[in-house]
Amino acid sequence: MKRTIFFGCICFLLLLSQGLSATETEEPQVKADAALLYDMEQNEILWEKAGETLMAPASLIKVLNILTAEPYVALNEEVVVGPLAETVYNGQLMGLKSGDIVKADDLLYAMMLLSANDAAVALADYLVDDISFYAILMDTKAWALGAVHTTSINVNGYSEEEQKTTAYDLAVIGTAFMSNQRLYKFPATRSHTLTWLSPEKSLDITNINKFLFSYDGATGLKTGTTAMAGKCLMATVSKDGRHYLAVVLNSSDRYGDCIRIMDYGFLHFQ
Image 1 (cartoon, rainbow, N blue to C red):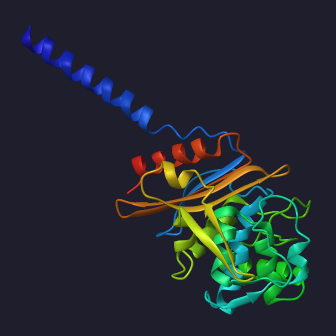
Image 2: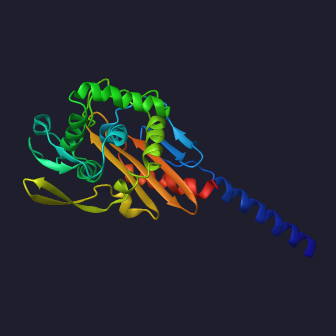
Image 3: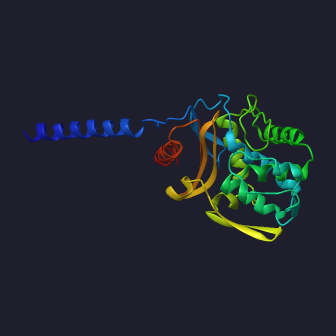
C-alpha cells in the first residue's frame, strides 16, 4: 500500500513538472506583425517573429539618424537651425525656427524623448546641407553595422513607400546606439528642459516612451507611430547582468508586447 502511494506521488509530480515546463516554454503571444528579442551582449537573436520582413520604421529611424551624426558633432556644439526645419509641421515638434541657436544635445533629447521631427531635420541639415544625401549616409551607417535591409528616404520616419527596415536591422542599430558611451543616456532620460541660446527660452519635456516607466530595469529606447507603420517600439532592459532589446513593429499593443517578450527572455535565457 505504501509503495502504491509512493509511486502515485512520483507520477503526480512528474506530470505536474511536465505541465509547468510546457507553460514556461510557451513563446510570447504578441500582436505585432514583426517582433524580435535580441541579446545586446552576445549579439544574438533569442526569439523572433517575422524578424526579416521589410516594414516601415516610423520614428524608430531617428535612432539611426543620431548614430550617423554622432562622430561628427560635439554634444555641446552650438547649432544654428536652418530654414528647412521650420518647414516641418507633421507629428511631434520641438518648435524650431530658422536662425534659432541650440546645443546639439538638446536636439538629441528632443528626438529621443519627444520624437521631434523638426529636431531630426535640423540636425541632418546642419551637418549635410542635403537631406536626401544624409539619408544615404544613414543607410551607409546601417550597412556598416550589418543592418543591410534598411532603406532611408527621409531622416525622421515619415511614411514613404520605400522607407523600410526589419526588426533584425533595428535590433542591430539599437544595440550600436546603446553601446555608444555618448548616446546611451538619452533614451533613459525621463524628463529634460530644452534650452534655446537664441532667442533665450526653454521647454520642459517628458519622455513619451511609457515602457521606460513601466518595466523594472528599462533603459529606453524609442517609440514610433505613423499611419503606414502603425505603432512601433524598441525597448531595452538591463538587469540581472543581462542586456536585452525588444523590437515590435505595427502592434496594437506595443508596450504589452514588449513586456511579454522581455518576461519571456528573462525567464528562459541566462
